[in-house]
Length: 155
Image (tube, rainbow, N blue to C red):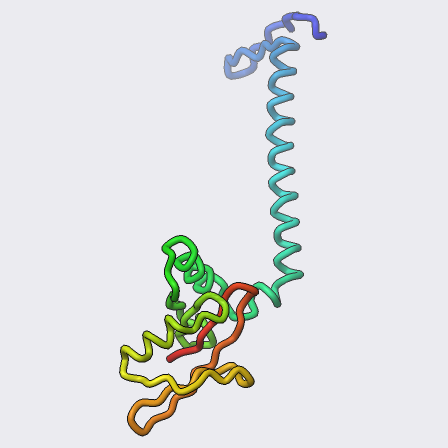
C-alpha cells in the first residue's frame, strides 16, 4: 500500500534526527486516530449518561441522596440480610431509617420488640406501624421505595 521510502534526513537547530518513513507515519497517524476514537466514544457515553441523569433526576433523587439507600440495598442483596439500616447525614429527610424487602415488616417489628415496644397494628391506609411502650404510642411511617423494597422511617 505504501512505498517504503526514506525522506531526506533533516537535522534541526538542536541536532534532532527528523527522518521518518511513510510506514512509520501511517502507524503514528492510525495510533492517533484510535486514541481519538476511544476519546470520542468515552465523551459520547458520558454525555448520554449525563443527559439520562438530568432527565431522570426526580426519580433518582426522590429520597435525597441515593447512595445510602443503595448501600443498604446492597447489604440486603449480597449479605442476605432481612433488614438494613440506612445511614447518611440526610438519608431520609434527616431521619435514619431501615430498608426491608417489600411488605416484609417482621424483621423491623422483631427489632422494636427487642427494644421493649409492643406491636399494635399495621395501618395500611396511612402506611404506618403502631407500637406501644408503657404509656407511649409510636407510629412509624413506611413507604414503598421501589417494586422490591420498603423504607421504614425510624428515629
